[in-house]
Image 1: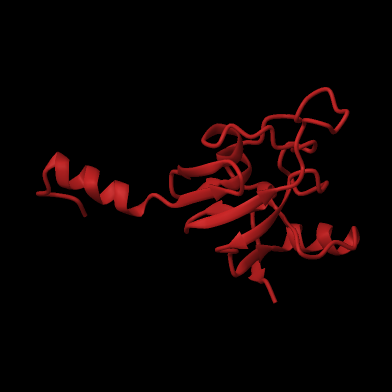
Image 2: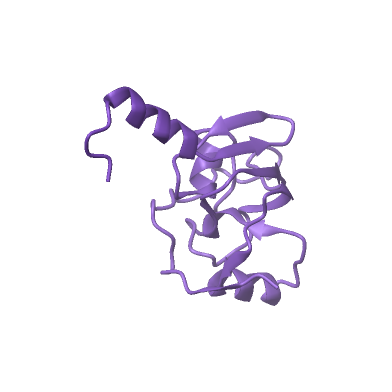
Length: 136
């Protein structure tokens, strides 16, 4: 696919497709395409984002509010846990892939939570294996 392109051109193409993650009141960060939002918040933005269940859609400690760029799709696991907890207007950062520009408000941080740590480190891959459904 990139055969015959110079290293400079390939670098430029990569820069063009890296999604921008804007964290309200923090800043804007380039994120590798397809990275889990929970990991991008921690690793690129330096946010002490909670993820008590290790990013497995079992709790809601990794929730965020979207200001702009909310994905149209949602995993069935995310939908189920949000419905079970009676939550609306929030999303689980552990179930979202950074595949477009987005702006979020982080609402679930270690600071002030009383927890000892953010939780078990989430894996790079969505857990459980995603079954995508329309957000509606």
